[in-house]
Image (tube, rainbow, N blue to C red; front, side, top):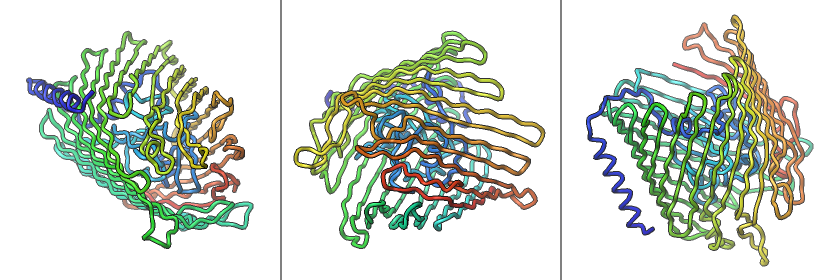
Length: 611
């Protein structure tokens, strides 16, 4: 399809929707409307979701890596504490897990990944994890699962300030401030964050220490909403993140490298409510990402650089046709320009169309279907589909099923990196099936999911005949596994107790070699126990990872545990919370990336003020 035709369709859809919006309609009073959150809920039939609470974020405030490592099924390959952090979801690789910011896929357009150590964990008031393929809704890379980072804007009378301070071992510092002021017409949220650490811990079982490991980052976030009238709302989401990291040494070699990141995200939304059941959201977004790599941090004039500039436009139509039938249609256009030392200048334009249907057939049976088609010049994107079904067998037991086709388009690095880029690459294609079982009682919940993923034309970087690393499409891989999660809550008088546990078993094989894929643990588990008594809280968390392979080497299995206490000072104004946490309380030696040990026992002190 030619670009002119694409633009004409987008313009026609936009004009038609807004002409339709002029009809008389019932005034809508929605105090907290977030389309991106509702979409995860309404159009994820048959998919499992985990909501990360504020208290879980506070326990692991250092980075989004720590938050998800201890509270989800995702395995992280971290190149040393605070360094590049790559996810593996259901045995897929880092570029097959998508991060969605207020409905926008923010994976790097250069390497296809999201580095979870340069995503602020304290910038969002709704973090959730959706297991399974999501390319129909969220585009390229959403194969293993998606992580959703959302900001909510409400029009209620609220004034709130929160200050979180933390100091820990290795001169680790954290400060974040969150301000909210809203009324019936306006909502303003300003967030500031700062993290820094000398990160110079000693390597256990060695005379070495983590030289050249210092890092610092800071973020500035603004979210603003304005209710024009009962039918129209304007919302702006802005997020800025700046990071500098010296890249840690390994057990085998010192390092003097350094890396700088800049990430700027801006999103403007117009919500138009046609009735209590029907609305149109128009989005315009601009995202800028840049990295600078210094192979000698002492020579600041010598570096390599890469950047992307993304412009996104979407028209999103939602309609609850009846009490049991909901539909959603999205037309989108995205233009990305990439520039860099190693790949010159390239541009990619993508037009996408999405249709979703959610149908509650009976009180116990429902299903959802989605379809997606993309049009771009360089690749023939596949026609994508997703089907999810939920059957409530009894008051306490729900059986679910989903299947989907997903994909990943080669990135700018894959195609154009010099030397090594391969412009003849094909898009990755993946098919997925999943069966879920959910048992829920008042105090106890249990979830068991079995999944199957078969992929072809996976993009893998390997050395060619000249010794230069270059990407190729490999034949097929197969991922089979189980995910189990449970939580239990009990309260009596001034006491409360809760347990959360997640366990996953994953077999991920290259079908040509029949070998387990690298950096995929067969067994993985995390566990969290909380006990509260009045204003006193204590918690214990454990992470267990099976061994993983990397080429001819094996990284041993490990477990690491943390314990923390919190106490609220009720007799002091504003009732501050004081917390103390011991990380790696058993001083376990472990590494999740070859030759990059993680720290032994270490401490952190936290103060949380609300005023």
